[in-house]
Structures are given as structure tokens and as C-alpha cells.
Length: 218
Image 1 (cartoon, rainbow, N blue to C red):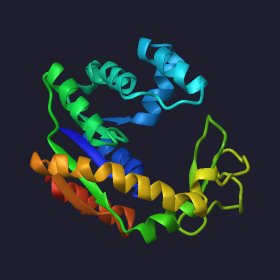
Image 2 (cartoon, rainbow, N blue to C red; image 1 turned 90 degrees about the vertical axis):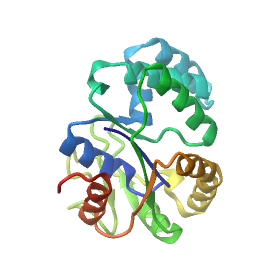
Image 3 (cartoon, rainbow, N blue to C red; image 1 turned 135 degrees about the vertical axis):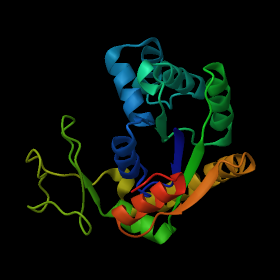
């Protein structure tokens, strides 16, 4: 099974992808994780990406595609994978199609986690993260607070409120997401791959809805 997840920041893609990967034995490919691993391991695409990152520039689409080519061609993706965080726009969607064609693969389904902006804003602005790179635990002041206020349960590091999770930037992030992603949603809708899932409610309920959409027994 080859699955792509779409959803705005705060929609819970990462959480649901991890749960689904564990249940179905699929490889979870998060764009952020792939980028960090490639840079750390010094792969050809990772070295190219690092040059842009060191200059504070966005990694261009052709380098991102090379990163995913490295991963999607690996043996652990042969039985299926879950894409999370890529593609983000229609141009990247077309590039992904070309890449999948090269490796004789195709997407089976695209899940779009639909969540109202007001809920996304609450989720994002309440998020607190552990800055310890060996930990990276995520908490929420309302939905999953740490046992000790402001302190990571896992490693004891003081939690931080990321600058891009603050209210003044969240609306801008969501606006940019909707502008870039609507053509991508239309692209997959036209290919009869898109399935919308309600991204509100409890995590387990959302996961059950995803499994129902995929026709996977709970």
C-alpha cells in the first residue's frame, strides 16, 4: 500500500502516519526526517541539500526529489510506504508522479485530513516542544501537558514555544498552506485518489476513520 497524507500544520499528520505505519508495517517517510537523515549520512542528495540549508535557503524541488528517490528506491519501501510532508504543491505533485513512474510504483490513496483553521490555530499555538535533539518530544498545554509545567517528561529539558508556533505567524502559515495546497488537492481529486477524513476529535477516532477509508480492520 502506497499512501500520501495531506493536511495543514496542526492537522496531526505525523501522529496518524506513525500509528498507521506501525499497524500496517509500512515505512513512514517524513520529509523533515528524510532531509535530516540524508544530511547526517552524507548522501549525494544530502550534501546538495546541506549547501542550501547552510545558506538559510529553501531546499529546491529537484534536490527534494533526489532525496525521495534515494528513500523510495530502498528495499524497505518495496512493500509500501506512507508519504508525510511531501509534496506540498502541484509542481511537486507532478515531480513525484514522474519519480514513481521511474521506479514502477504509484500512489494507491491520498488522505486529506480536513480540520477547521480555528482548531488548527489552537493546536499549534498550544504546542510546546523539547529542544533536545535526542528527544524531540511534543506536548500541548491543553491536550497533552507535561507532568511538570514547562519540563519534558522524557528527558527533563525545559520545553520551548517555537517562534513559528506563535499566534502572529500561525494565520500566515495556514494561509500559505491553503494557497499552495488547493491545486494539489484538485490534482489528486482529478486522479480519483483523494479521500477526505475529518481531522477533528480524538486521535483514536480519527485513526479509526482513516482505517475505515483504507478498508483496514481496526
